[in-house]
Image 1: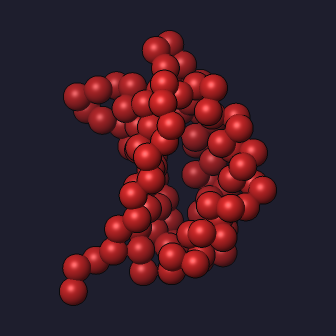
Image 2 (image 1 turned 30 degrees about the vertical axis):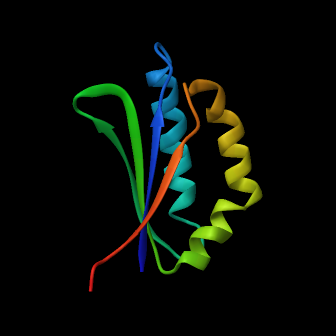
Length: 95
């Protein structure tokens, strides 16, 4: 099992639009094969810094979503709202 942390910096004034868009995204992500759940988070010290944390059965399941047409459409919609490219970190539990 893995977790994926996506960090994004939202452009000033677009926070509420980003939030409503990402809510739809998270609801579609959790329906993807191998996804065990996901949530959208905000940095309490920087209101424009956003995170999406999702849990996946495997890295292969995540990569299938990462390269899916559905995700490409989502990224095309949110990219204009971002100050910089998203940062993706793949995590797994320590053993």
